[in-house]
Image 1 (cartoon, rainbow, N blue to C red):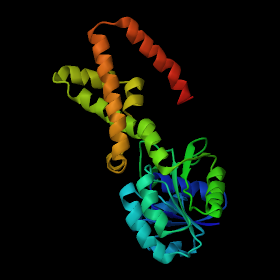
Image 2: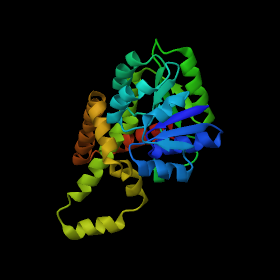
Image 3: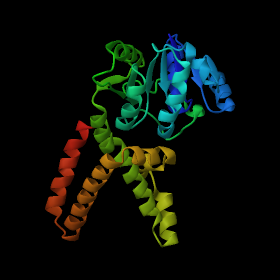
Image 4: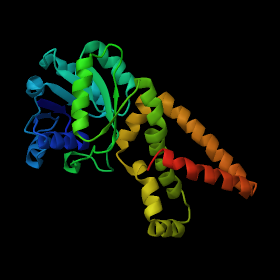
Length: 279
């Protein structure tokens, strides 16, 4: 197939690499000529351009731009495409994207690969980034069956695990396991930096090891991504943050009261619940 990728960052570059490895002809579009040149040199695309018209030959187009650009770039892009072209996106928020784009294009299906890293840009592209990772598709009642099947076939070939749900369900779910962790992790870093004793702060920096590395990774990642999560999934994220605050208040009260029995019970519940989310 001729597959177009609009946006050649970590996700777009990794997607292009894997699709080329599977024998597809990959057409890439980026805002910068230098990114196009790097994408070709790195093997992520067969052809690349800053000109959207390159994607007119694509059978399927993946929009891999930052969240804030998906809708405006989509509106520009469709002028160059055949009405039979299937379009999907990889945005981490689905309801506002699907609501805005579905009326404009019959063959649109929302998507979200739950994969990534702390790095960004085409240089960070990875092979097999999507293997055994969740890939969520959010078709609605008007989404053509053929479009769903084609995107499913491509996603399945990447080795990802496909899930279907409504856009609103997706946004509530990811607010818990993706967007809330970014905010909590960021707050952890900020809390550490609030230490007023400079010697203690320097010691903390020196002592930081795997535990801090694991819990601070997403909070110290791409600031633009965190901002877009909050802006476009505001209500679901606020609900998650408020529930998290209640849990923190509970812990503060338990520790303040030296109620070690209750604390042990809660820690045991957490220990038993974690395998339900991650292996």
